[in-house]
Length: 577
Image 1 (cartoon, rainbow, N blue to C red):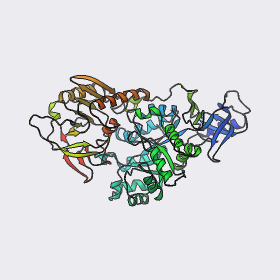
Image 2: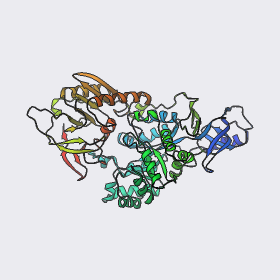
Image 3: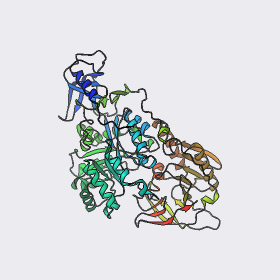
Image 4: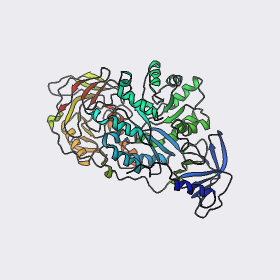
C-alpha cells in the first residue's frame, strides 16, 4: 500500500476553502462555544466550523451555507483540544485499536506509540500497511522507532538492521527515535546506535530517553548525544536535574510508578511554577490502572496539586504538540487543526461528556458512539499464536544454581538455588521456565518472591513474546501450557489439575481482541488470584513483561540465557531443545 504523501489532498484543501466561501456547507457547526485558546492563554467565545476531519474556521461568523450541517449549541460547556498521550505502549494486553477507542472515550484522541512489537513481528511492508490502515480510525496515531529490543536477542543484528531502522525513521508517522533503553551501549561506544541518533536528529525528529536514576553527568552526556526528553524522573529533584540539562520532562503516572502527585508537590517546593517544559504520560500501564482514566486523570491530579487550570490542560495538549512540531495539526482549537475536541462540564472536571476525534463523534452526551476502531489483524499476520511443538517433564528440569529473586514489580536480583534431595522448593520459590515460541530453546531456573502457593502458571505475554511457565507443581505447569497453547495464546492458572483462570490473548499471544473495559475486569481477577497465592506487588503483568528486560537491574532471563545486566554477560546459556 502506498503511503499518502500529504495529510490533505489538493482536492480536499479546495473543498475546505469553499466552505469559507459559502459554496459548501460545513459538516458540523459548534455554536456559542467557550473554548481554551492557548495562544492567548484564556477562555474565549466563538463559532467553530468543521469540515470532515478539520477545523476550517474559528471566530464570530456563522456559515452562509448550512444545507448539510449538524448544528450543536455549546452553551454551558467548555471546549478543550483532545488530549495527547506522548508515550504509549499499545500492546499491554490490549491492542492498538481497543486502546485507542478506550483512550478517545476519555478524551485522549492522539497517541504517540511504541513500534517495538510491530518491529519484532512484522516486516516493514506489512507494518507500514498497518500504519496506513490505522490512519482511518478516529484516533490520531503516531509512532516511535526503537533502536534496541531492551533484551538480549539471539538475532538482534538481523532484526535491528540499518535498512530497517532508517526506513522507520523516514516514515511520516514516526515522530521520534527511542525510547532509548539501550543508552548504556551508546555511552560505551556503540557507533551504530549513535549513527541512528544522528540520523533522527538530521530528520528533525525527537529522541526519547529512558534514564532512571541517571546522574547529572550522565544526563549531560546524553543531551550532548542529542536526547531531547526523559520520562523517568521520579522525584522533584530528578525533574530539576533534567531541566537544568535542557531536557523536556514527561511527568509520569503509571501502574508501577504512580508518581505525579508527589512530583508536583516536590517541584512546587523547589520553586518551579513554569510548566512549558512538561507534559504527561501514563507510560503504557496495564488495563486496570486505567479504570479511573488516562491523561484526563493526570489533569485532575495536576489541578488538585495547585497547577493553574490553563497550564494543566496545556501539559496534556499544546505542550506536546509544540515539542513534536505538530502544532499545525494538534494540541489547540484553531483554524486548520484536526478536529479533536473535548466537551467539558467544568474546567475542574477534565473527563469529557462528548468527544470529537477527526470530526467524528466517539462520545456524545456521555454515551459511546458507533465503534469505528476495528482492524483485521489476521490480514497482517497478527492472528492467534500457533505452536506446533510440545513440552514434557524433561523440559522443566533445572540444572543451574542461580535463581531470580523479585525485589519489587520489576527489579530482580540473583540468589543461590538450594538443592534439596526431595526436590522441594522454599516457601516463596517456584520453578521458572522460558521457552522459545518456536520451540527451539529453553531457559530453566527458579524464581523467588513471585508466589508461594502457585501450582501452575503459563503466559505467552512476555517481553520477548516467548512462553513463561511458573509454579511449584510441574504437572500443573504443563497443563497450564497445554491450555494456553490450545487457546492460541494467553495466561492460564492451574491448581490441583483444574484450570481456575484464563485470559485469552488471541493476537499472537500478546494482545487481546477484547475491549479494554472487559480486560480491566479480567486483569483485576488475575491480580486477586496471584495476590492470594503470594504475589506481593502491584502489577504482575509488568513483572511478566520485564523478566527479560535488560534495561533494568540486575539479573534477567533472556533468549540467550540467564543474563547479568551489570557485567553484560550471559551466566548460563539457553539450552537447545
